[in-house]
Image 1: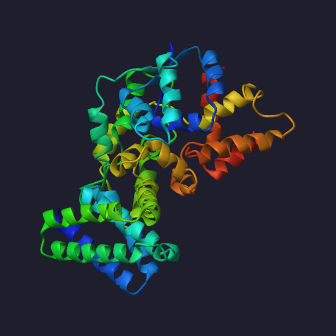
Image 2: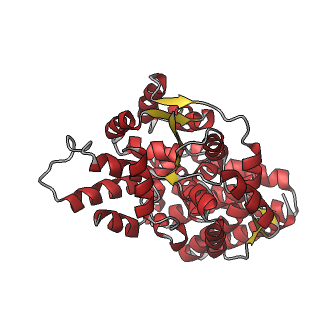
Image 3: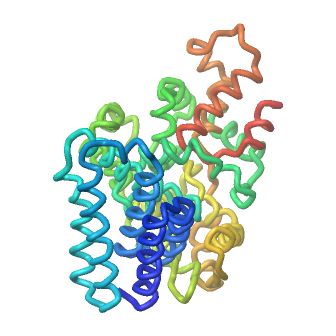
Length: 188
Length: 221
């Protein structure tokens, strides 16, 4: 892990823990958006994992419904402990430990009661597709983002198609009338 | 022999919009071959077969490949194209790897066989071929950082793809609509502009990168 990535992850983890402590969902949401820049340029496993994790946490903590589910207190306790441990490891530049803790966070849900496990599993799954869509929005190709986030291009197109990505000013190249002319000439 | 090369995104749009039958009719008129590459096949069939959500679409497309509707062929070399494409832009001195195997393999195929057109619905590859400066602007605006364009890499990439014509699945389906190949599917009581709007928006919602403005222009044709 290069020093830039490590510093960025440290900032993100600190901010996420503060956001959780102060119930500041806006802050976690902003951090989630911020992670996309690093994930788009570096495209390394660590930047992508933290992007998916923070986005999922912003969704999980943003819904009071989850907090009323049986098993929530236990989940939250384990989660915060792991986030603090991950922050300690990254501060000590102990990357192996950091990566193992992160893997552990994604598996906490395996030990949850099925009522909350189902919800949180879906949030983590959707987080990957959401982040893939954001990378595509940032200019990384569909195939590249699908590969980086481990989603199919079907899932990604289904998600990205319902956004305004296609309307960005830079996306307009050849006039559609010219493109239709080409198509007409092919199928005379 | 006329040829079209498809990337993954364009076939997904057509399949997910349920518009493969009009495309079959269009192919008869084309009197040529439709090509995909092995990596595109993996993305269209092999990967989604591992999931439940899109396994049916994968099976339907695999049938089209088996019956030869789409021919699978590999270009001799796509590494050079991939190398240049992924060396075009830099942020914080990191090269931004913008494209993937399937996209470059199919683009290289289109170049190699001098295809009549390359059919691609995803935005990045189209921008890179048609207007890399716009892609740099997009990257810069979205990443909130300065993005450097390596002019040599862009020039080499541009030389390799020179003359490639790009269409999207939407333009193909639009022509199929003009030829009446959707008449059996869409009742004639709806106005033409509403039919075109429904078709193109339906395809956009399935992931084709066509803008609202472009759809409005097509409706006026």
